[in-house]
Length: 422
Image (tube, rainbow, N blue to C red; front, side):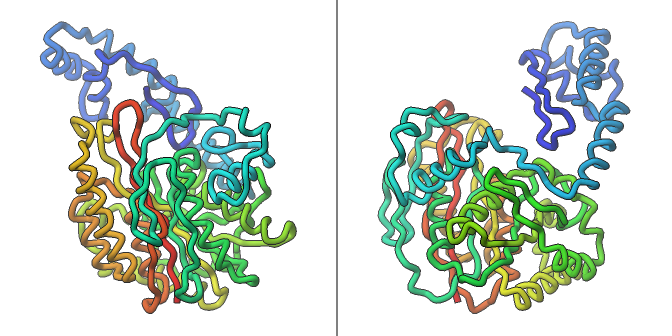
């Protein structure tokens, strides 16, 4: 099944497996005749040029091929998004409840664990997939628990909270980890904190290292307004175009989920409490491809300097929406990890997190980049950015670690909740 994560088309294309060797060659570098010839050799049976042309035409008309129809529609949608004042909640009703009351109860009951579910919500099935198998570790006492045990919410005992790493897996599967991250924020959120720098992974390619967005983020619980003044100050300090990849914000979930939980927490403190966000997608793609640290980049350093000035002026809290490993058949591995391999993944993830806890951005980058092609840590960009931005005297505390396992074929997404204090 093909789907467009950037939302140029909302449709899906379901393909028979036998045409995958054909479609996989739609790279723009071969003619239909060449594709037919190579696919014939791979499949061991004749693939006609007419079939290749038919597939290409149908996919082009459905906007799954980079051709004139796709480019026209993308240009139109990009113009509409650029002109909009609000970034709509594109995953509401799918990745989390769209109804405000149901969403509030889900966050309080399933994530934060502050109250029991109401009788009506116990009978109501949630949307999406619910089955999961997971291992989690309580960051406060180091004990390993099964997938149904909730992480304890101990007080931090470290000082003022300045930053949080939260997951960006969907809230259905990441409920306990979101609860640990935003439980820490709820416990230590200063009464006057009103500015939040949101750093997220861009799951679509980016041309520039970072992408700003000047739009309010809509949520079922109300909007999170953008701190336009601070965003403009950051943009003015850049020697690249920080809006070149703004379109990536349109359907990117890594920041949308943080806006939802943040809006809930602020409303929980006071129904009228305002909060502003600075939404940033951290690409750093060229550095991730090469493995080289971004520390030598003048453009990246200027960007982080501008973020630090905002933190100092606004007393802003930094939140990174960042998952860890992606391993198993869904992500290209031949088979699921066995128990020994899962234990090894646990240890490797913890080695990375230990470097993050020390606020050692370069050690964290080096450790994660060394096996990025196999562990596929998609949160490298936002977590590194958080570590480069916050006070070097801060100390991190892992509040929760979890491996969420697909119940059907065993693929794993690991994620953690980390608080940083000074």
